[in-house]
Amino acid sequence: MKKLIKMLPTLMVVLTILMASTTVLATGTMIGNVNIAVNTSSSGSVTNIGNNILGIIQVVGTVVAVGVLMVIGIKYMMGSAEEKAEYKKTMIPYLVGAIILFAAVNIAKYVVDIATTIK
Image 1: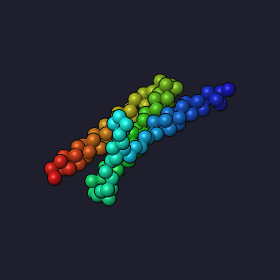
Image 2: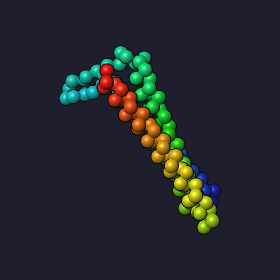
Image 3: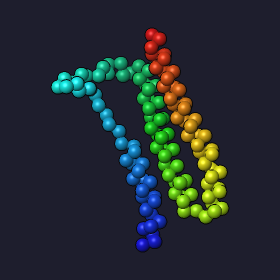
Image 4: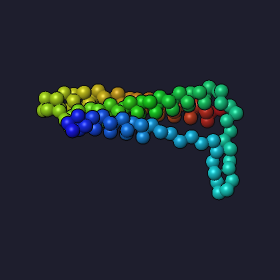
């Protein structure tokens, strides 16, 4: 029973990451009964490749950031007073890194959006 209690937080973290990383893909938009196809003829362009790379970086970064946050949170809840102080110290660099990751990806997306509208 003690083994199950120790494994439960890890199992919950894994299941949460799996549920958060599912994606929905679509190739068209339904408006009423009419299907409007999305133009994918320029899939090899630099813009689309850049958008795909930024999307991958954002998804992987989000999954990793949420996973690390859950692990630190679980360790914080189950730790002693000394361990809690140590986890508080590790939380500041984690938060700075997560903010930089999300800000960098979003700033890069805005730059790409602005560059495509200039054409």
